[in-house]
Image (cartoon, rainbow, N blue to C red; front, side, top):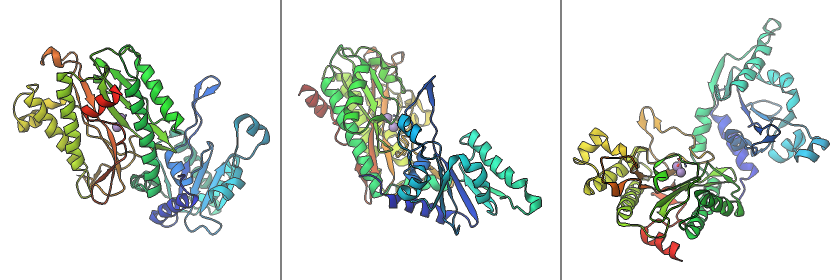
Length: 437
Ligand code: GLY
Ligand code: MN
Ligand code: MN
């Protein structure tokens, strides 16, 4: 299921076709980050870099130079080094960059300051991710200054600097068939992990133990790293949107909210399920849960090509308001509640976000000041929620501390959407049946 070498090459070609004439694009890899003293965080490649290269090493830079006679795709990467490879693992080296990653030309990264200014010289425009990494900004300027220092000998420095993100992130927003297959796999792994957590959950289990079940299930299936920090919030903790302490003991009668998704082959999944610790929803929990589920269903009917980004959100707001009005948790009518925004005490986030290599993926939500129109190949989450703060004195005590979110990953298809995370049950009866089994 791996992305083929030719797909990476095709992406570079598409990007170069969008670039202005006489330009160069410079894309740096991710770098290793210290966790503490001698230990590093696991290396994670920069997504823009990986999207264009499939190259998973730090200390690398790609230059894309459309029309360059001696090759348009130039890699700079670490040289092969027998001793270092014994300690830290395989390096492709410049030869491997050409043979295995289809670079036209490749050089040791240690030579970049000598070689790259010569490749930039004579180009009118430079594309790079301006302002993303101040150290890299400084290096680009140093390369430009090397050329500027030689103007009296006839060197011509570039005069325009353009942001690469705009083109590149629009490409990343539309997923290819291979990307969709990888994302479906990521979601399937995570959905199975949510099922595992439901099966083992019972009063007395700690939140971190459910986190461990999720991590175990994902890692055993190839999703070794979480796409974001796992949230396991029991009881009141479900009302803290980004709760990641995961340290409390789960109590009988409470709900637990799990927001967890693995990364698989550089693509994220992002799933939330909320279920009763002891396997049965009580009356109030059922009422709130059903509103959230209905809101999600309503939102999903608006996920189709031609609708705009905000339509699923608006649909979820309407259903949540209607439900909370019917329960007496809000006053007024749908219009007045939308107007006075009182629903935001219970539903304070939006319906979702783009999903891809990043969990909150790249891509504009508005184009020309208008909400973006959904198109086939976009992938997004649909994740309404209701959170009744334990300190909300304006509602009866029986409602306080109920937090519910239901989150799925969906790909916009030609005539609607494909649900990627459907293997994790979400109706009340499905959840109770799984937990009883
Ligand atoms: N797990 C992050 C989010 O749902 O956006
Ligand atoms: Mn999400
Ligand atoms: Mn989530």
